[in-house]
Length: 268
Image 1 (tube, helix red, strand yellow):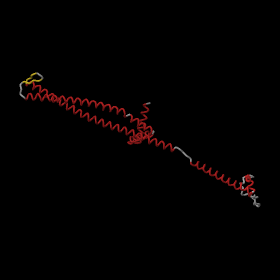
Image 2: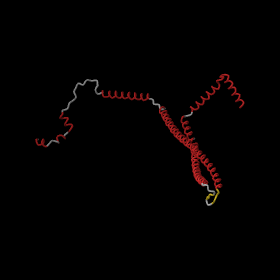
Image 3: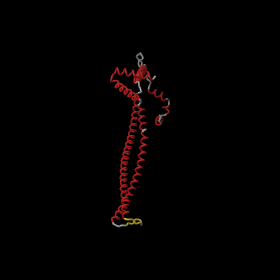
Image 4: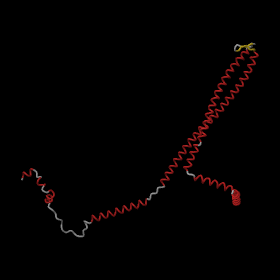
């Protein structure tokens, strides 16, 4: 199976070389790039935003590790500072002893006493030489420790600055991702709104139908009202007109007579 695959691949390369010549590599590279871009474009935007969030979260282990290293370096530098302070104090004490012994030898005394013991000037001179050599060595060591301290402080400050920049960049990336998420939600809301389809033509037809029905009813009412006017004959006789006295008597009956005022009754 592998042999067949290799043979088929070789044939494709040979045919491509014959057809495209030197441009074969360029065509292959361009095709691969096009396929890659197509695959990337096919990935949903929401998935890419979630992927960006995951990549930001992946920065946390590195940040924690660097914070641990910075804290450890701070402790080491503090220990180095204490060591330098102790070395400087010891040098000061040793310097005081050297100067005392030098002054004692400068006095020209053949015998010198220290802590209740007597020493010859030559013994003191030899001890002074040893102390002075040791002092210069310790002084050089102290200078080296101070240089180491300065270099480590500079490196520590650079690490702190880088950490601050990294944390600021992480916060900025989180804000930008949230902004992208909000914009995506707005686009999705707009797409959902545009998916609604309202047929205004149906509303127009319903309005026309209602208008037509209203017109029909108005015509029917008008015809009913006009039936009493158009009777087909000319009215010749006047309708009977009742006397006003009879109409009032009919309407009120005998109640009008029983409610006569006292003045009217007295007049009768």
